[in-house]
Length: 263
Length: 255
Image (cartoon, rainbow over all chains, first blue to last red; front, side, top):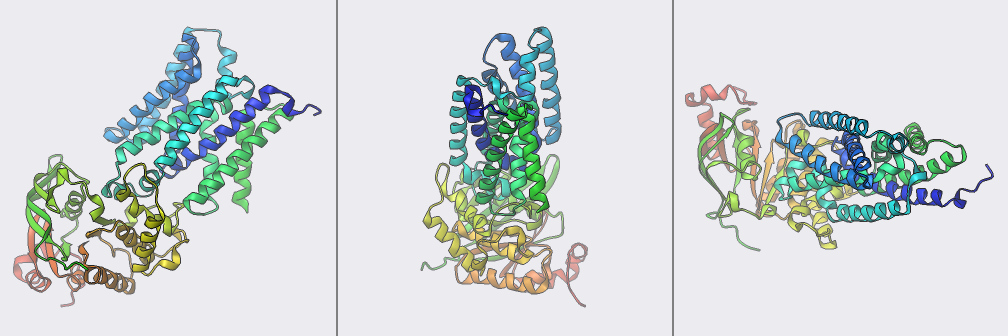
């Protein structure tokens, strides 16, 4: 334990990327949780795995292909859900299993990506590059800006969609925007926590903050604090105890949730 | 203060029909709502009252016949903030939602503001004033879920008021609310109608109660059965021509 975490450039990059993701995930997560969409993050994460597989095969940066595939699919999910031809959660199940199947087939076609693939499944901040940090920062800033811009519409339709629509809010557009932003946030979070744990980052800090029973603005603030601290401590613990980063972050978040639930 | 022009038509409905798929819910409805009216829209459960309301709120755009709001055809109408809406509380609202009374009332401003704009100090003041109108100003920082049903109802009225509407629609506002609270509620509505000159449309299946409050009654049972003063409406409800329909109403009639 004599090593200093800040001696290593890759750890600093990991911390930077981790904090950015920690800031952005609950911002989108609060709207998903309150609209009973928690599982959409998980679905989009699996979809992004198909995007990553595509990137690995084509030799492109998997973050880009993941963003593309996930955003397009998010539109498909929202269309299926609003068409009312199938139940909303069935739409999620279709995309979740379908994209996983596609990812498996694609990865089977091109062998030899196994180590890489594990990084994407479980997250590995060691592999975060300088370029990744830049992409994540730019996308996170854009997502935050859009959320800020449409904050009042998002809170209104989350609370009472029918009244929002009656009041002249373009609910269809806002719903599409929300899911597209969720897709973006999922894709950019992958290098940090991995495909399998992304929804934890979007959901757990929000669910924890909800236990404080505060107004909307304060709930967001609490979720942000919980999220950032969990990511920082998760990364530090994983470094000193040589643990898997994504898993450690999520376990720290769950521990905080448990403590808040008890007090 | 502008004088209320009772001849001005706020809502005009001509030969309106509406179907969900093949099922016709409303047939050939024609009636007007004038400025300053206090209208009770009654009818048995499943009679199409809520559908009619949703059409007037622009939530169901494809209708047969003509609907005009403030003189403009429904399909071209844009000024939705002129229309306030108090939804049926129980079905539309998650009591664990983390939002304060002040935040809820401010939502009433959002439709009016348009995209890309933020709530200003002026919006907050209008929202505060709306809370005062319903006597809930002390609850501004409380969570909406912590209030009683009657208090929540008043907050939703304040939210509707915050958009500075000319007409307010209330959908079954008193369901699940006790008698005393209902009286307070009707007192507030009367004040909005008489002191603030708002046009009020109240949907209810409780005709006995509502006919004591409103100025006009429209009775819907797929088609418009009646549009009259409460006294004449009650007389006909209790006479033979309504016996068949009457059985379906909730009444507190003691005969």
